Length: 145
Length: 119
Image (cartoon, rainbow over all chains, first blue to last red; front, top):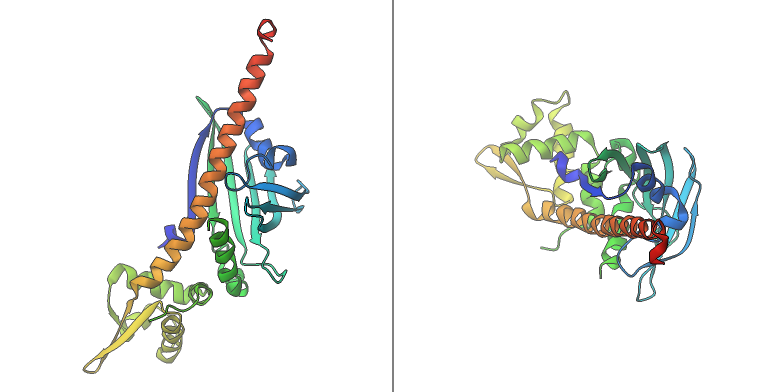
């Protein structure tokens, strides 16, 4: 069942490791790919330091806004990036927190990117945030509606 | 039957003992309450309380056969979690595709820039 609680994705991207890494923390690059196709990022704040906060607001083509934010836990350029991820709910409170770990490694064709999103960062925290799950789900639901 | 909110499902699973119970039921299928209590250093009433939370969240169902009380995982509860994960997967797969395209466009622009006679 552990795999049901962790999302794992792998991509090979045809660009040098440092460039791919920077696309995650350079706001000018991030806004160009973050989120579903045809969404824009009308506002964002990215404090790309360990312990620094980030927030992005995605705007759907239909005009609905979805805000997600978190804190950078590890910024080990160009190898590894760890940050937390929380949807902001309609009432302004934060939803369940998940943790994203992205590792970047040189590959023959460019960069191998490994993405992991752990939905239960740790049990204690998951317990405290348990009631945010539903809203987090609703945010994603709307995003793909 | 209407399934309980997903927040209840995740709330129930957030407890390590309850998660272990569900994992055990998933691998072994049906178990008696006594069997389930065995690996844990907690009392049978405490296990029953955990089972009650899991049942309320729609994760397991209990039934009685003669003097034995059996539990099993409800498949529809897992479907709700799968659905949640699927949406996250969709979100990131689209984003990563866009990232790959962005990086390729950047590279193409750079390559064009290094050939001034084509400009």
